[in-house]
Length: 190
Image (tube, rainbow, N blue to C red; front, side, top):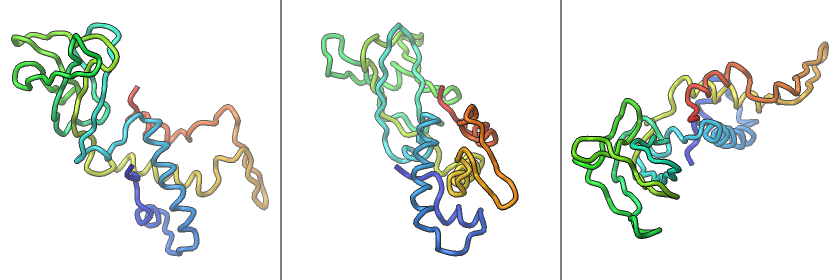
């Protein structure tokens, strides 16, 4: 998986010129990148130029499926599970059997220019596609850098002592700092 920021970008943002903490920064950046990707439910940049295969388990009939890696760059194939098989997929024709809605980041099942439902079942639909961003969006990059700083400076600790005062973090506020969470929630797949 690709990190959402580089060490060079982080050090420039924080004004760090020394290499003294490079090892620690090298450990924090991939961990924070993975944390953000997990929290948001998407990878942002990993599948922009590389195919992602996504399976959809459908519990009820529906004519639309929503992809995870957005915005959609290219849909390579849409396949449905063959009705008589658990393992055989049948490719749909992109000119008549499905439509890609780039505004909603969805794929609609079609037949005779009307919506049709995808089959119901475990892994009933398989989509191979490319999606996401060429590089981390600027606002997300800022949130990731602030989150790296949050761990780099041990701001997550319940209590931090300074020479003349103590900072206490409330156990009820154990999540992300508000200014970071606000940005991450804009990108979260819920």
